[in-house]
Each structure stands twice: as C-alpha cells, then as structure tokens.
Amino acid sequence: MTSADFFKNNVSVKRFSQNPVDEEKIKALSSAIKNCSSMDNRQPWKVVLVRDEQAKKNMSSACYGNKSLIEAPLIIVVCGLPDDAYPTLGGFLNSYSVDAGVLMERISLSAKSLGMHTDWSFSFKEEKVREIVQAPGESRVISVSPLGLAVETSNLPPARPVQELVSYDHY
View 1 (cartoon, one colour):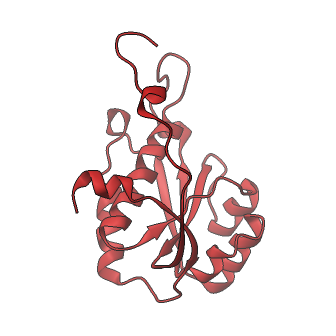
View 2 (spheres, helix red, strand yellow):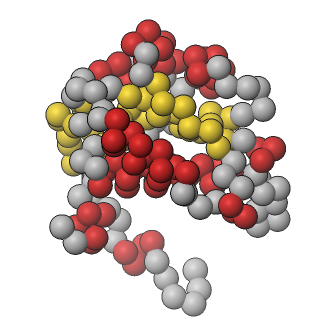
C-alpha cells in the first residue's frame, strides 16, 4: 500500500472486536506517543490507556452512551496539560490543544499501521472522564477513543475538492 492509499483509506468504525490488543502493539503505540513532536518538544499531555471493564462502562456513560467504548479492548484518553504547554502559539493560543491534536493523529496513524483502528470522540462530560481516569484538575480532557480491531466499518462522506482546501499565494 502506498502512503497515498494509506491516507485515502479512511473509514468510520461501527463495531470493534473484543479481542485484547497485543502487548507488543501497545508498546509500539507507547513509543509513538513518546516520540511525538510538540511545540518546543514540551509534550504537554498525558495519555491514559483504559482496560478495566467497569471503567470502560463508566467511560461509555460519560461519553453519552458510546457503546464502542465498552466493546473495544482498550480506550485511549488524551489529556492536555496547559501549564506544561508553550504559552502563546500565534500570539493568542496555548499550544496544548494543538499539540494534543498532533498526538491524536500520530496515535491513529500508528494504530492503522499496526492493523488497528481508533474512533476519536469529542463528545464527553469532561469532569466525569477526569474522575474515571483520576486526572488532576489542571489537566484538560481533549479526546476519548476506543482502540482495537474493526469488525464493522462504514465509508466516510467524500472529501471536499482540493481546490476548496488548498490555495497558492492568497486565501
């Protein structure tokens, strides 16, 4: 598969296999997390891997009943750390949310290269998620995702034409 094919082949995961994720794959993902770049290499994040069945049920509830969080063998919770981030990105924005977005893409691409899928959710009750993973108050939950083998997928809507997304020399 070429890199172009790799990036074109995006799907939405409807159901995950309940088979556990191999420890070697978890180590590979952990290495991808460790080696992910960020602004000034501050790495203002903490990633929590949730395997406990009761915690997964609680996480599903905190994510408005997202059932894929129960059936997937692993949940990835990305927390941003504003106090550790670059303070002014572009003169107006702390870098933790952008850095966490780069990290989430790195995790997704790494999972895909290992034959697994993620399905990032941005719909959650932050205080509940923070409570489940025992995250400190200064952290911000950025996203929650199941991780595992897909058993049912659907195609995403077609991408917009490149001319709508990219321009030269001016907006």
